[in-house]
Structures are given as structure tokens and as C-alpha cells.
Image 1 (cartoon, rainbow, N blue to C red):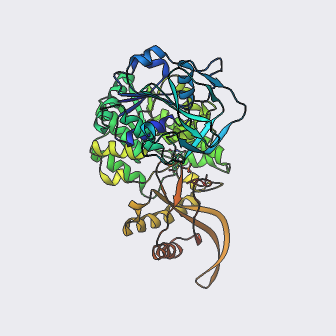
Image 2 (cartoon, rainbow, N blue to C red):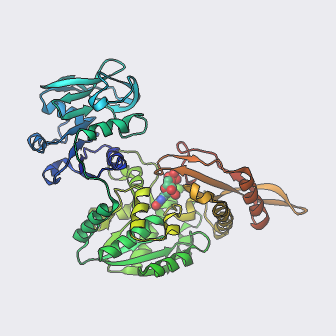
Image 3 (cartoon, protein in one colour):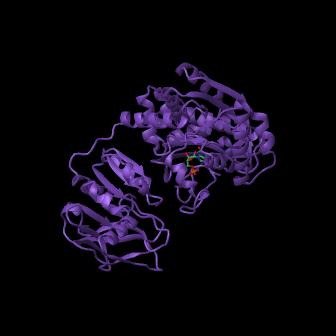
Length: 502
Ligand code: XMP
């Protein structure tokens, strides 16, 4: 496998992701656990937020690293660290280079085999290489002639830019070229990954009872089935927050019964609506929902010893600033509110899917025999319809959203567009406008239809749905849903917009 050592960059997981996309098994480790990485075929040192000259800069046991006798690639911080280990120097700079840059390979061979003579890459660093270590060659420069890629001997490589982000246009090819130097590498099979996850779950859980919150979505369903398959004492709990879509609770219950995973449904809709009463601030709404969710949850289970969550990688980085300052908070994600952070510190939170991206979770689910219609379900946010109901949440508004959403989703399924979109929904725009219904003046809300494509929720683009489809949805909503006299289609990409409205 490929061992990726995490020096703290917010992109480290993307390296893992890219390696897996190239078909190889990759796993993440902390540099201080270098002795426990098994028998890797290649090692990648990630970037990180520190400067190598910082007092608490993370280090690596260089002798042990060399001892593995496999190709090593240092990215950003990883390259600077290697340069120092080989006897070179790194110059600290107050100026941060951030964004696109141009890469000029010295020779289009080795790491740069098949790479353009001029290639766009993405940089995020402040330190630069000052003097080179022993047996070191510069293998690429930037537009200012500064060395941005180094090679030591035959099998140690360094790159200053981030090949793992899509802004580095030929980054994946550069990673592939590196991996090609490694000879035979283990292929990535979801089956092996599942076994790793099951082993980890068993080791962490032991005989303890695990409470697993399920929403009926792909992530939590895969999580529940995985725990069930791992043979741990799991209790799936579904909390009806009153923020679910039309008929959702009954469908989820039926699905779980069919799969043989024990589920307890707790109807807390009144409590949630009461707690949210009059609150219009998005972050406060999220906190209220997140905290109450945990209250209701633990009320339902009482003496549960651990909590399992279906948190995925995008959730982890978007909320990263709650734990450290490496990435800025975009939203307070439902599954990362304060109470859960406390529990995390006590080691009571299990997040076995946190290294996975959505499509990998789907693949895992298919491997465990979960039905396709569940796996194909669009993601649905933890705070439910509350984030699609900007401002104050009321039952009346939620019912309107439910009806509009039901029509939109049914038509998407009917026309085959549900499968082609990554996420779609109807939300409410809490502004009343004047219209005419029948012979009468109406004064009602508008609904916003949103349909996006995305790979991992971190970026998204709106879908160019066929006009006849939009026309049909609009006409049905205007005719069938009371309380709506206007239908709008949201044509905003993420960024700068987000997928949800709050
Ligand atoms: P945004 O609106 O941030 O959404 O572009 C990105 C993806 O995340 C989902 N989402 C959430 N999922 N808890 C979740 O589990 C949350 O609090 C939450 N907020 C947003 C959203 O539906 C989209 O798929």
C-alpha cells in the first residue's frame, strides 16, 4: 500500500483520495507512527501548516524512513523537511505564495514524464528551498526560476506545489509517475478496506454498546450496516426532528426492518419545533438542532457508551476550525457541535467513515448488499429542512417545503434526472409576493428549486435541467401546493453559494 504521512495540511486526505483513484490502496498515518506503517510500497509526506524552522515543527525519523527502502515523495512541507534531512536549508519567508503558479520541468522524464513543458500548479506555502542537500537535483522550477521540485538519488522526490488539488492540472499524472517508480503496489479493493474498518471498529468498541444515529441516508445506513456486520452491540436510533421530508420516517423504518438492522424511531418533532420557535439565525438554528438531537438521542438510550456517526471527509474539513485553526469554518456542521466535540475528547465518538468520500461509501454499501435505491438517495443535511427554510422555521413553512419537494423529486425520478443530479430539493423563500390565483389576488411565498452536480460536496454546479421538466414541476407546484405562488430555479454554483441555503 501507499503510506501517507499527515503533517497537518488540509489537503492530506485528498492525497489519499487521489492515490485510491489511481487504483492503489492508500492509508493515512501520523509521522510519529512511522514504525507502524507495515510494509508500504511507497511513502508520501504531506504538506502542513508549520514552518520547518518552527520550534514545534513536526519531524520524522529519517533513518527509519530511509530504512523502508521505498520511493518517497515529499509534498510542500514534506519536501522542505526532506531537503533539511539531506543537509539542505529552507528559507523562511514572510510572503505567502498562494494560488496558481507555473511549473517548468527541467526534463520531461521521471516524475515529469509526459508532463507539459509549462503546466499550471497550485501553491500554498511561505518557506522556500534555500540551499540544496547532498546528491540533490532540481527537477522543476517555477516562472521565477525558483526550484519547486527536487530529487535526491533515485527514489526520493520533493514537490513544492500541491498535486492533489484539481487546480494543479497535471497533478494526478505527477502522482501516478511517482507511484510508477514504486514497482508493484497493492490495488485498492473496497473489500479490503471494509475489513480494515471492521477490525478498527472491533478494536475500538470491544464489548461496549454503540448508539448509531440513522437518518435513512446513504452514510448513516452504510454505517449502521457496517457496525451490524462488525458484530458489535449496536442500536440504531432514528430521531424524527419534524424536519424530514414527506413520508420519510415511515420509509426509513421499513427499509431498516427489511435489512434486519434493529431501529428505534423517536418522534421528537414537537420538541424540535418548540426549541426552534422564533429563531432565525442560521448558526443558532444549527446549534439548537444539533444539541437537541444529542439530548433526545441520549434520552432514548440512557446508558449507551459510545456514539457512532456517519461523518465523511468533506464534513471533517469544512468544520475543521472547530478543533484547530487549519481551515476556516464555513458552517457549523450538525455533527460537530460543542457537545459532540466534548464527547470526542473523551474518546466516545466513533467515525469509521471519516476517511471516505461519498462515492466510496456507496461502493462500500453496495459491497454489503444495501439496495440500490438507498445507495442512490441524494444526501440530506443533518439539520434537515431547517437549512432549506431560511429564517424562522414553522410547521406551515415545513409543510409547504415538503409538498414542493415531493413534487420536484417525483418528477426528477420520473424523468430519469434524479440519478443524474447529485442533490436536489425544493426550499422556501420566506418572502411573500403578490400573484393571482383563480380570480383572486394571492400573497404567498416562493419556492426555490435547487439541483446540483458535485463530486464531494466541496464544490458544486447547478444542473441545466430541461425546460419542459422545469415547466412541469413549476406548473404542478403552483397548482397543487397552497401557500406558493412563485417557483424559482437556483442557478448558483458553489462557491460562492453553498448547496443549502443556510
Ligand atoms: P453546503 O450547503 O455546505 O452543503 O454546500 C454541502 C453538503 O453538506 C450537506 N450538509 C450537511 N450535512 N450535516 C450534514 O450531515 C449538516 O449540518 C449539513 N449541512 C449541509 C448538504 O446537504 C450538502 O450535501
